[in-house]
Image (tube, rainbow, N blue to C red):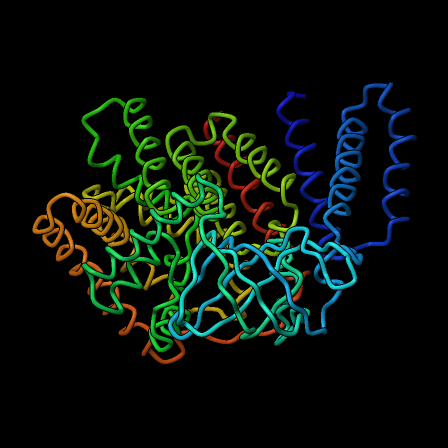
Length: 491
């Protein structure tokens, strides 16, 4: 049995262990039972039975995943800010992230060793919600006074768990704020924040609304300014994923770049595309979500170039392992990570199934690859979308086919327009008009398809067994298809 199979078993076991803990949160005695199960398996392992070897590795890695997930549990002490939730407090901290929305602003504030009146020194993160103005910036030190609250759960959505992936366990709504000083953030992230803010300002200067927010959503996932009625149309047509920064967005623009560079060798095109993604990541601010999406996008590019003939699936699993080892909570509470991961897995295992169909599509502007990628990503990500958004878009296959080929030029023209706005504004406006034309087409398609009767149906309360059942059935189907292909090739 090949070494790669044992590596995959180990990685899947670890991810399964983390997922098991986050979903079910088993008591600690489960962990000990599972870890002690390896003793009889270890004895069988000495006889070098492949099945026992696989079980041994899987259970050990499952136990390690469970153990790692337990360390991300948070139990507040008097030294933690959230220990004082549901009380009025005066605290002081530094703003670490800014989120300006249509009618309000949200700020992440990091409190570090702030002395309370009784002399206790507390630390922790707080998410504060304020009116849009006056605005504060990354690195500002502020003093806040208000009631600390525990994030609530509503409509089956755990806001507490959602924020916990950022190590935020307290919120404050419209506290009294006193500005103290600025420039206390890290030099690197200060620069990245300036880049991102400048990027957004240029987008708003080039495009009118809602095109500015749409373009910002495509490029950096900043969709806060999209009008609610248009956002609802995105949900109905199953196109929300295009304005949530993910590996899908990154990969689809890479395809377009590679089409433009098709005169180069594949290796050279690969290198240039990776360089373009690194520059793109820097220009849009290098937020953790963008960095993760860029990594997944690069892996998606590798999948398109090398497919199943390489060990790219091991690389993707190992990358996911490293990300989850650093922050286990993203596996269950970060929808962007889930969609990125599933989209890339779709490129590896689902895309080859559409090879015969895709050959009939035109290659110009990367249309063939864009449509193939969209269908493959949708096949893999469908249950994740239904589980998180509780809606099934019946019109999604049609709407995705109609807009998928337009996403790369919309992203590329918009990005180039922003870059040229720093150098030669008239040229920037030229690319801006090109991007505006493509964005207008996409919005028209969204408006038209969303008005079709029964375009989507609500599916509240999707059960976990349905989610996992879908993937088990899909895996079995893919195994059957690939075995059948192999038999035909050998026959």
